[in-house]
Length: 70
Image (cartoon, rainbow, N blue to C red; front, side, top):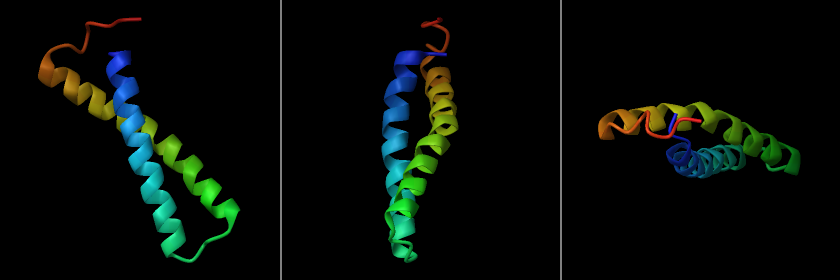
């Protein structure tokens, strides 16, 4: 896996996913701090497979998916 690309994609995916989850929690009326923290944690965890998926897609388009092996 291209780890530098994954780190960039994950940073964007984590920001967007966490923001969507927090906004969803606040709109539905769960405005206590515990609910917001749970939504933020779930957003960070859910964005890991999202980042991996889009990293592989971008790597296959550019042809660089095997360039940065660990």
